[in-house]
Amino acid sequence: KQEVTQIPAALSVPEGENLVLNCSFTDSAIYNLQWFRQDPGKGLTSLLLIQSSQREQTSGRLNASLDKSSGRSTLYIAASQPGDSATYLCAVSRAAGNKLTFGGGTRVLVKP
Amino acid sequence: GAGVSQSPSNKVTEKGKDVELRCDPISGHTALYWYRQSLGQGLEFLIYFQGNSAPDKSGLPSDRFSAERTGGSVSTLTIQRTQQEDSAVYLCASSLDSTYGYTFGSGTRLTVV
Image (spheres, each protein chain N blue to C red):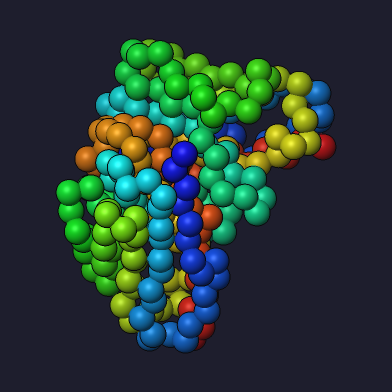
């Protein structure tokens, strides 16, 4: 059974500092991995999707890497801003169109 | 519509009553998923529809939970005889195919009193 772990569970940084969020999964036979953002009381917003054949994806200040063999992904957020404060979730899919297995999330606070 | 739409956004119901939660996926998306997020808990998979295939119901927590998807579009999640432990945010997501990932709705916050 796939298990996804996110460490740390919470993170507080001053504005401008780079953020590093970690995600690990126990079964390396994944189809893809997706990073989401969730604001309090809201749904999930997709940030980046990495297919199993890819090593990284980038969007603006966000960069996500994937090391499938070691079961790890890292989300980097450069030059953090207070608006980046949210919970960040990673999720993996075992096959095309298959259900997602989520990590517990990392709650981020960026202090002005 | 432009995104996944869920209704109602909030629902308060008395223990023992039945509730229906609705999800309108993005037009053309063949896959539709229901997840549940309880206070302090992670996201829990409930059920998955893919085109005309039989749904994957492996995540439904009890036989009080059921879901249908009519015409390959709108989906309704029904919870019968609600219990307090059913209180959670119910999230719906749709996908064109996994290459494009999943788009989530804003969820329905269900409170059973």
